[in-house]
Every structure is written in C-alpha cells, then in structure tokens.
Length: 404
Picture 1: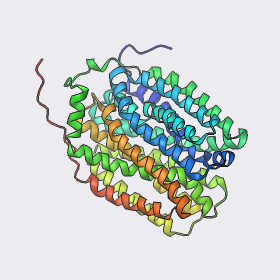
Picture 2: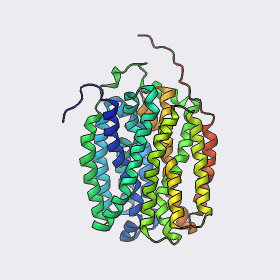
Picture 3: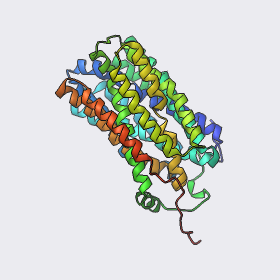
Picture 4: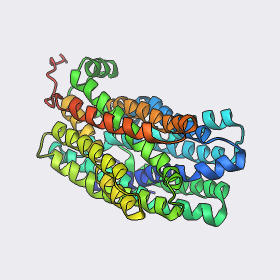
C-alpha cells in the first residue's frame, strides 16, 4: 500500500477516518443488544453488564487524553493501529470471560483503550490540521456524520449476527471485521511529525496549563459531561426499557437505534456547517434544551412503536451534533497543534458522564424496578447544560510570542 510522503489531503483524511469512525462508533453503539443474552447465559443481573459498559466508557475517557497526546506527537496512524488491535482483543474478551469482575475490568480496559484510539478524540487532530480554518467546523461535522452512519449501519448488522450465529460468535465476527478494516485505513492517516507544523511551538505542558486555566474550557467539560450521561443511558438501556414497557418486539429497539444513527448523519453535518456561521455556544445550548424537550415528550406520550421511532429520529438529529461544535470551539480557542490531546481531555468529562449514565441506569433499575428517576435526571441535566454553554468565550487565546 503506498504511503503518502507528505500530509494527506483533506478528502483522504475524511474518507479513511470515516471508515474508522463508522466501525468504532457503530460496534460500540450496539453493545446494548448483548445485555440480555450475556446476562442470561452467565446468570448475571442487569447491573453487572451495565457496569461493564460503564467501565468501558470511563476508561475511554481516562485513556483519551493520552491517546490524543500520542496522536499529536507520534501520528494518528500508529494510534489507530493500536486501537484496532485493542478493539479486537476486547470483543474476544467479552465473548470468552464469564467471571464478572474480570469481564468488567478487562472489557473496560480493552474497549476503552480501543475507543480512545479510534474515535473522535484521537481522530480530531489530523482533521483539524488537514482542514483550513474556514472548513474546519464543516470537516468535524463530516467526521461526526461518519460515526453516525456507523450507528445506523451496524445496528441491524449486530442484531442479525446475534440471531444468526449466537452472541459469542457475533463478537468474533465483529473482532475480525474491526481488525481487517481499520488497519488498512490507518495507513492513509499518516502525517509528517507535528513538530514541523506551523504556528507557535507550544509544549504539551504549556498547552495543558493554558487549557485548565481557561474558564471556557471548564464550561465545555461540564457540558460534555451531560452529553455523555444522556447518550449512553439511552443507547444502553433503551432496548431493555422498551421491553419493560411491553414492546417485546426486538426489532423496535433495533430500528430505533438505527434511526438515531441515520438522523444524526444529518444533525452532525448541519451542526458542523452551522458552526461556521453561528456562535457554537448558542448551537450547543439549543441542542441541550431540545434534547430535554424531546425526552419529556417521549415520556408523556402514549408509548407505541411509532412514538419510539419519532423519539429516535428527534434524538438522532441531536445525538453527535455536539461533537463538531465542541471540537470546533477547542480548535478556535487553543489552535490545532495539541487538538487531539485537548479534545481527549474534554472527552474525559463526557465519559465520566457516560459511566454514570450506563451504571446508574442499571443500579437504579435493580433497586427501584424502573428507569423513571434516571429519565428525570437526564432531563434536568439537559437544561443545566444549556445554561452552562452560554458563557463560553470562543475567541482565540492571546499568547506571548516565544523567542527563537
């Protein structure tokens, strides 16, 4: 396979990263389908599998800044290859391990590291460095749309695999697919050393200190926490919630999760496009308010297959539309030299929220017999996030020139 000797074109980066994101986000989005078959096969409560997925999300966040730092320093190609191998190992681990603690910890480490190396945080740096400033928000929107397409594409694939070959063999098939598809794409994400990039030659420590001293950075952290809580709670627990409410046909949940991915292709793309014209903080605030409204209407309306599909479509438009806007704000304030690291730091907050959304859903269900309290928390956090994003200052930081 020929390797580019210079920085790859934006088109090449978007295609290659799109394939990686499609698989990374698509496989991860469907892991909720394994909750009931694995729990039944191993005699676990729903809380055990929920905690495993929660641990994956938490470790994704923990590894995120380091994967981003490695991508900025050593190149995206190497990081994606590590992620593909770790993804394969994690899926095989989930198929084989039956001891609850080992299952939770091992899948958390393997899948968490895999997602840190193959999802938005690690990929954002090469996209930001490849796109000119006027196209950056749009390019982030394209990459988010690729992740959304993966959610749409992989939902029926994963459900059909479980039905056709069993839940264990479905993991093996996905492990092979991830490895064989991601590694070739990684070679098209090869770029020159970042030390040759133009702009201020800021050290990693200086970039870190600059970010944590920024009020806007902390506001992004808080808002992204809410995003993670909402998305992972819904993604993991919606299939079980629908069965609890009497919608026993599994195809309803499959269709709903696929619709989320389908409609977020549109939502992510236009969020990125609008982010180049409208203040991104206002768009983020509007997204969180609208999420709270959509969830409230869903819970108050009579439940049916069509109400689920409408809910999925509405949430889909809003699902990953926060990603291009958040990464766009980070790039606009701090530049692109350490973008993957800074995006990973913000995403850590997202994954703390994801951990709580996945685990708290299972915990409260086991102790209260319903998801009602978690739904209320999800709505309240959405309204809070809408307020948190409004004071963000999107202007670039002013730096003192470094003498040669």
